[in-house]
Image (cartoon, rainbow, N blue to C red; front, side):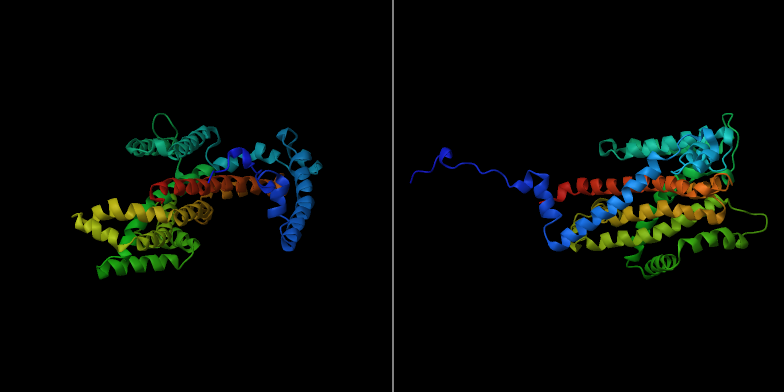
Length: 367
């Protein structure tokens, strides 16, 4: 039987829903009566909210701090001039004013290295050394006392550099501790398993505020007279221990998802326990739990705002200090919006990067 030629079978055009916005809207926004009602309600809310918000935030807003707080009081829009007037206090807290270039440079170095570390093609052993050198340079810039830099005690650190420092160091230090706790909880040795379970359940059973309170108020009472520990170090230890307990449960979930045959195959190859975990089990387990791990990273970054309990001026506390000025106090909304945008920017980057990383690491296991 002769097959029909291509000329006898005319090509059909793709569905309109794939070509035109109207078709997409008909399918996704107005496909049923409930969807239509929700779509119209959403459009009405946007119409009611967006125009006044744009008018307040952009059209009638004051951007230049030249006129001072008086120009903002006369305006009907937002007072973004607050950021021009108080940006240094909001970003760097009570760090000496004439030395603000030091935390600014330290922050730029850390953000630049974070962006570099996000590029998978640049991963390598050199990156570990780059971070070691970067942290050493950041420590010199922040503390000073060498190379002609004035010494600045940690009690004067604040703002965005303090928030980034606590978050990054807390995450870096908590991650290996969480792996050890997760492995300890699955250990066959009763003493190690009991200690791991006790630590995880105890820390996860209390809020971070109580951990920081213990580190700030209660812990110094047990030290010998005349001995004190820097409050920044106490806050860092509290955040690290708290984050490690939550990360340990995420890692344990990944370990339990690995089939038993993987460990049996590693044992058959003659690998030691630590070789088996490092080369076979942990890489697969950590890949499975990237979303909860990054979720805990984001939580740790936001929880740094609680260090104000121990008298440290993080980004949020520095913003509150900037709004203590009576002239600018009425414009606290703009200040908190600016701080929220900073937090959102870092959290959004971590969220999107984790999704990309999850897709990249899953390429080799797709069928």
